Image (cartoon, rainbow, N blue to C red):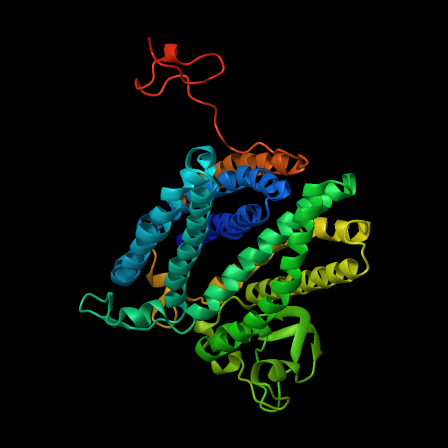
Length: 472
């Protein structure tokens, strides 16, 4: 049955599936860690009970999402050795140290303070606990820093040389880390993480406001989420535009696929809003377009020329339909985020932020939009880089391990079954926690006093009220 199936395609599907599944958890964790730090900081600054109640409400969700992000990400490193051993060998001298820096700095920082953040408020005091929360939030940012540096080098490789064995070896670490596309990707991804979290928090707040408009916790979380959307959504659109201009400079073929420009336009290119890209025929069928608008956006001039895929050898074309549509999904959701932020400002101005049910339903419907936009953006970035793993230097077909299709198919099937079973249950439990209304004196993750601690505290010295008493 698998005789005619390409092992390379299966390996790509497997890595694409695991990354798409994984990326939503770090995106949520990055934003939620910062949100928790803000909540705890506001509680320390104002003393308002609602902030610490919301902290306890969301920290339970953060703990599960963080754990699922770690677990879902571990398997990807093994795939480098199993399905992509040639890629690992050729890029290891450059990318291996960057991944190690991520573990030694970001992951150790997160892991070192995570236990204090989750369980230590009653043990270290509020100020030291706030420091631990800040360190976890900073750790998630550093993790994004190193991972995006790795990915950006694959998109815009700089600062390397090639040795006699055909491996990429470091020549300038600063150029490798801060490669041309890295700053744009870092800003774009971190803002996407904040928007993703704001949409989830806003959706949960909207859900509880639709059930009880007087719930103080729901009102606070919804207000904070809408402020984040109103402020960050327009910034993200500007950051995305700058990222697009950078991509046009360094990866023009990807932009051609995103725009659906099979043909060059010497006198100004149209912006194709919708259509059906036909890669074989080299055209977009049933195109709905705005004349010259693409040139205005990308070159800031109506009559500026733009090259098309007709200037690129066909063997270097990415899968245009996939890139074309994933880009439009991402942009459309970004526009809806901006609309939601603007409507929230209007409702706030009219004093109806907590009473306007249509706004709450819109926010509830937009809850998953951040995750979809992140995955769509990842597809645009990664599929648009094809047919290369290291853009322009190492082709995907030359990066895979010499495996047979049945072996890859078996592991892909196992991944799909296990991921949907394990992470499906985790997501359902998160939704169960979100369905519970926030309330005053919300219980956090503080565990009860252990009855026995590894032989240090005899059980007989602890009373039924768990209070420590001198041992007899």
